[in-house]
Image (cartoon, rainbow over all chains, first blue to last red; front, side):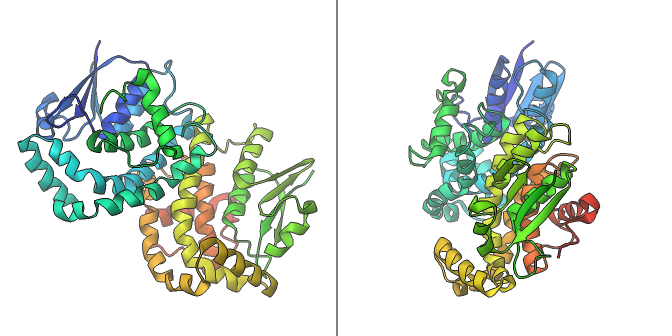
Length: 227
Length: 227
């Protein structure tokens, strides 16, 4: 039985970039599961699996169809209990929601202002129109206004990552001595930035850069191969 | 054998306010341990336990003397394994470091700008001089400059708490259905604000306010009794 992961791409299907999909890619590899990744353009998402979800990731595992990266991780943890744990116990599951909140509301809010134009430029024309309209409505600013804040956002990124840097002063991963889903949540954010802009915009000797590089090296460097 | 917790107070020993000490107070109650709290003024800290630590909390448990709130929580988890867990497994311990990083570098950085003058005004004269000098050196600004930013900091507080609010959309506590040390880390920050300024400066119907109120009600409302 094949697991299918529907993820997100621009005009080039070889460069999936969604942070939420990257969390699931890493979670599937963590569990040692083989899967087929099917990157979709924004406007194609509503046409697969009978329009089950307006967003990706969506995971098809036999009869099961699950959307939302966190729910997928919880599903994998329950469905594959003998594979390495993604959470390290019930306290880990619960705290991963705070990691998600930090990633979304502190890290993503800065990264979004860096990479918006880069994502736009990766898309096919039909998706460009959808993307510009939906994001300008969501963020309440024109792309041109957001692009003007790009340098300030790059300058703000190190401070937004200080909670992760603090964690890495005590341990190699958010998960402790080995990575857990909390790592993949934050990895997804920086991989999104790397795939779309070509850089994570941090000094190479920043503990966050060193951690990110360790994550890129996991599972035979599969995440590093996408660039 | 009595456990002694050295904590922090101003001129009134009945109003201990340190966020880090509150984490430990809640952790001790979580473990069901009886303890004697000995609140100290800033300038008294170096005179107890042979000057073992320049900061509180410091925990004396028989032959053991431990400083730093996170290390104390880890000690309690290991020394009292049969009492309710503070972390809910190894993933929970590891992720609590990210909760700590978020609290210190996102939440505290806003709260500090709200309560600095309030803390100063709670202290005895000798401690006021120490506090002003050490904080002005640490923060690189005069108290007067920081006071001018108080209203802006109050306005920034809801956004700084968005990661916690996100978490509470899925579960009652950072720890899940019941509180864990991650809750006490963030509770400590807001209790610090409440004890020193008389308010947490959030709307009463904010999910963060409702969670904070649940925390105040834990252990027979012991934390609510300090105000």
